[in-house]
Length: 305
Length: 279
Image 1 (cartoon, rainbow over the protein chains, first blue to last red):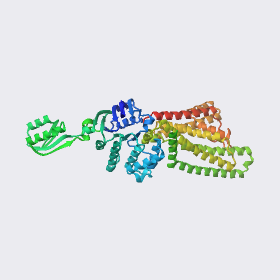
Image 2 (image 1 turned 120 degrees about the vertical axis):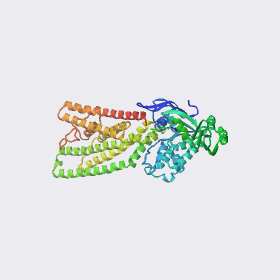
Image 3 (image 1 turned 180 degrees about the vertical axis):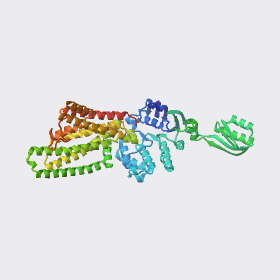
Image 4 (image 1 turned 90 degrees about the vertical axis):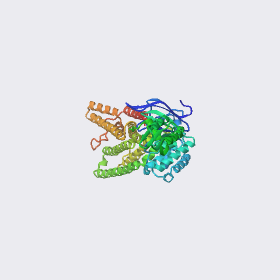
């Protein structure tokens, strides 16, 4: 179950009375990868993250983090964590906030000061190091929270909604930071609602629904290559459509708009040649599958709670 | 131990930065000034009537005035203890800031112990400042030299620590408002128990005395003040009639031991509850 894994869980379950928050969570996150955790609201994502970190006790099942139990003091010093919608001790300045959390991690003050300056600079807060958090905007608090998670240079970084409250510039900054950390060999576990962020930054994603992992995908494979063809066509015959249905996974014609779900990217040239020979083609475009398409396909269209 | 020290220092720093301590000290100085002025006015008037010639009466009167000052200090310390610590666990759990701390490489019991120690230091400083001020004023203005100072201050401090431990225990389970209501309610109950016992002793009613003792066993905060008051002035009735600072029924040494065990149990339960709860 462990080996080279940053996070591994087996049959993890959490109930609050009759309410099931996490039903049966089994997953494995490899060291050095950026792992996305996706699911509708109320799917049990944040509860799962808290169980990984020992903040919530599982009702059943097993969790190992960096090959140790989550309550292990030694392992906690190797993890950075940004909780979702957390209110910090806002009477502290940014420097004091980082100094406090650095001291809890056992860092010497000189190292805390150096790392704080580096991270505040990297996160665009260098000019605000001596301002109280009380005066920070939501986006600034999110950035200083991320600095706190990275302060002790942890091996595993768990970010629960890291881009929440950030403007587009802030989101790009965080995205670039995640990619930098991946290049530096860190493991990141990212829980986010923003599918576009996950799509760009993550190596693999787990889709969670009703507290259960329903699918784990390698994004490089799942999103690589075109999956859909859209064409504007006229004078198309029924037997052409029948032939297309044999060549593609699905065919849909609405007026002049023809949409095909292809079985693989390699079938696109053949379909294109066939279509051009059988009818008048005014436009044709191949589209890649987005993470949103996959999310809706796997989780379904229902809104979370 | 280092991590407990970090949390304790952080707790003290928060009280200073949020100006809790400054507000308490400012009002404390005002209180001490008014107390000293009150003593001076009383001293002047009583001197005019020639009361100082009656040594016994003068001793009883000055003892009552000292106990009055310390009685008010005791209430201030009780209020400060509960108000300062009521939000420390429940508030941080509700805001989520506790998640950041608890995810760090420290044990949950160290968080509770650190907060307890931080508040214990603040309360001690406040108690010494206020009680020291009252004793100094009584000595300088009316010539009342305090007796049994370590015993009386120790008991008052113990009462504050008992309330602190119970506040942390309640705060580990309940929301801030519920924690405050619970601890204040229990202390007022203990206060009532003390008075029932006192009146039971005055009226020679064994039933009332026993009921008072039973209530004190339920929550032994007030017995610590009553024992402290006894240490300050002994079992005497003031020349001003029966006052809240007179002790007729003196809490026994066993009751003080029971209160100490109660304090320890509350702290252990606070640690246990906080260590096992979800954040």
